[in-house]
Image 1: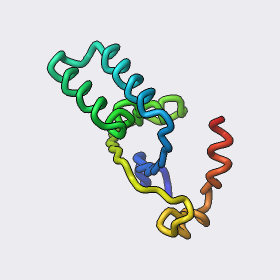
Image 2: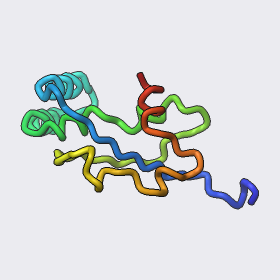
Image 3: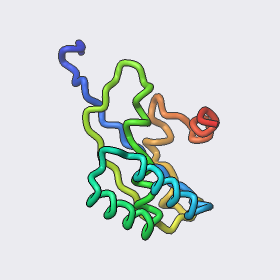
Length: 120
């Protein structure tokens, strides 16, 4: 297949489970980001501050930006992004948290340890 026949767009799906050890630190960081964001109108700023103060998941959603994930990747431009966060029950040993067979065996897939080690 030539480049003309393939799409230039790629959907990258990422699911991340974070353990929050200091909810107050997350909330403070989100409040700082809101305060420093000059592009946020005052009415929206008050709403955002209230939301991140009441819900750690909202604070994380405010702090995590998909653009940051790809901004340093050469040859790509973010076309569209959406994300959400929610508090969940998490048991790393539970079957529902295991990788799918496709995730484990897909060509080019990386072991999560390798990915985490590369970020450290």
